[in-house]
Length: 515
Image (cartoon, rainbow, N blue to C red; front, side):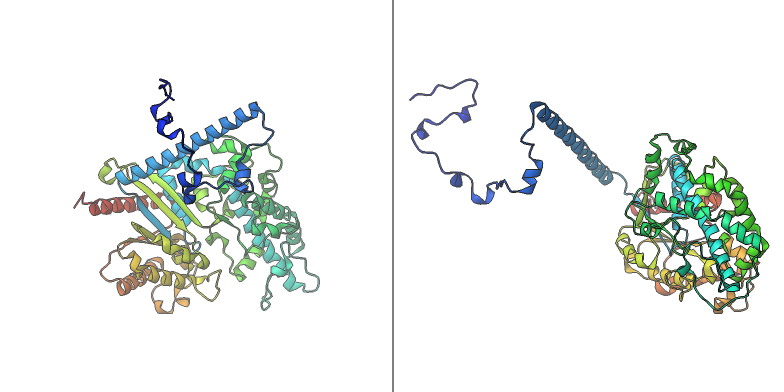
């Protein structure tokens, strides 16, 4: 039999004249068993991706188009990731900064300052989200005072005491103290402020994702979280996007992301209770109660009771300073990326920066180690105003002593021997106010001795203590030192600009671009 080549058929597909009379080879010989695809009708993945048996031609066409579009999007993402990898390899190496310190040391506030300096538009677009956090800060500050009033009333009337507004079992039973008596007006004021506890529940539900463990404690609408159990959000949970999704708007103006006509807006109740909150905060008997319990909310992050007229106004939008002062405990790792606009001496720079903020609670410190590798610098924040406070996780440990131990662990870690160290002795404004009020540093740090109880003497003493630990455990090593109040935008911006300049110079020196 003679075969004539068909011009439309590739030559390689024509049957060979010598093989036409031979039986075809078994499939097992052509394809080794180890390479044969195994397709089973019982395979769940096969069944899951198989088209429905009753699929119509139109449905098939629609499905194939959707699959093609999904593949296009996937390929575009892969291409973008590959371009980013190539760009990172070719371009200057990113400068990485790790923020370390105990909980409430000012790490998140420092990260906010970096964002405000380098991404101001994005920072200000998040004000709608921070408005809810600030409202929660206000409510929880009032809640703490109401709990203190319940405690004082229980002490004076042990058999007829009012039920604690949050959780009766949460109040401790220490030795009785001599509290000033509350009058009927105080109790009426307390009852008028009771609606704020429901506002607290509403705000917490907005901030926490569905299924969060702390939400189970709010099953009873009449209850609220004890003030000692601060809520926490995971930094990767995207809580900031919750509010913009609820509004469904894409405006960059933060005021446009707030639904001013929402009758359930917590700001409505806050505005209605504003006068009573101011009356509570300025009441001399309440202030005396707080002095007896050594309760000083003005020293804590998230304090807005001195600005109630402004933060409870009907159309309140947070300022930059408000966002810096707002307190929301974060878990996990927050990363902020930006490109520095200018370098040393005003020269244009294209360095990518990455700033990492990791949780400072004792239970989260084991997660620090993986971030020690390949870091250009560590900014260590030590809140020196906390010399008279203890750790919330362990009341037997002084907070300043804990900062000393953390600093010692950092400077003696061999993984960090080539990492630049920058020490922020933070919360200097609070330290200055504490010492001026008569609280003595020597009562908590015996080695301070009879030195003057003023800010200059105390700050220099603490600087020498931290420097001594560095010299003992990492001799001949340089470090950079700053006295800071990171809620002070102007001074912190100046300090961070100097930090950026130092790190750029160091990065260029390592790259042998400058000497």
